[in-house]
Length: 235
Image (tube, rainbow, N blue to C red; front, side, top):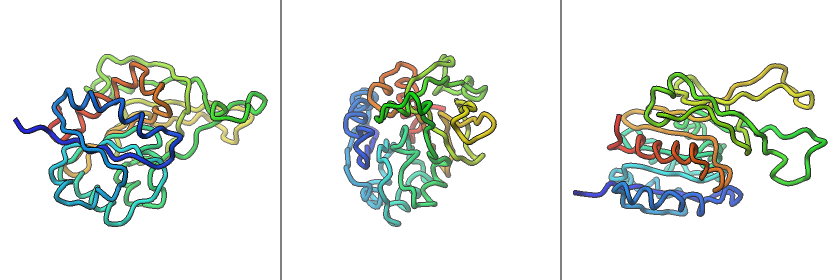
């Protein structure tokens, strides 16, 4: 039987540990019958022949830029059935200048609210909040979230700008605090899927560090999302 092909594209800002984070899931992909190809440049998306035979893309590229040819190649592959999965800034904060990429993904990182100014110490933990991931009704009926109940994380809580073509499987709510400028609680998607042509897109916003990706619920969401998004994934 011919192995499925998973393409890992990683790079961008090192603060999201794209190498260590994606390496965490290579053994899982291999155990599930994928031949894994790893690329450090998103220009691989412009390789039409390679993308045509790629069943799944796992992207971890925070910020950075993407050429028109590479973006068009990725979008064409997804429309034709290639799955696309990623987490945190590696997919939801990629290629900020590309509106076509943002339309493909369906959501974009806006900010991660920080702690009370009196509690900040000047490092990345200033943006670590304890928050609840709440599973939606659609999530409870979806194979990615099966058996997962609401859970808490202490990490960056992503505020996401998004459209209504996404299917939201889990959410989080940003509360009102006296040191923030908004005036009512804001709910953001935490896990969503998107059908784009014949392809499936899965986005999970937790994943700032390898430790967060190893939280059992987060790891399960990523692993199930990879399988579900793949061209030959289960319904």
